[in-house]
Structure formats: C-alpha cells, structure tokens
Length: 70
Image (cartoon, rainbow, N blue to C red; front, side, top):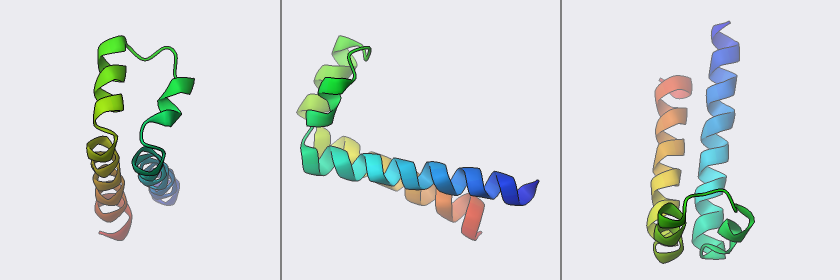
C-alpha cells in the first residue's frame, strides 16, 4: 500500500515537473488547448509562463523528495 502511494506521488511529481518545463519552453502556448480555464487565471499564465513553470517544477521536486526519497 505504501509502495503504491509512493508510486502515485512519484508520477504526479514527474508530471508536475514536465508541465512546468513545458510552460517554460512553450511560453504559454500549451494553454491555448485549455479552453475551460478561467480567463483571469489564463491571462496570468500567459503573462508569467516562466514563473509558473518554476513553481510547477518546485512542486514536483518537493513531492518527489518529501514522499518518495524521504
């Protein structure tokens, strides 16, 4: 059971890191596919893709470190 939980958290951390990297490198272009995101949140992400990418990478690293490594 603990192994399954660690595996799920590891996968979510990797997904968060990859989403953050895609936000940084695609500079918000990926957001054009998400039509159901609220307009204010969408505008913020289009203005700050680097910041949000870094935030998602930090969240992913924290998830992996906290629940899998530690």
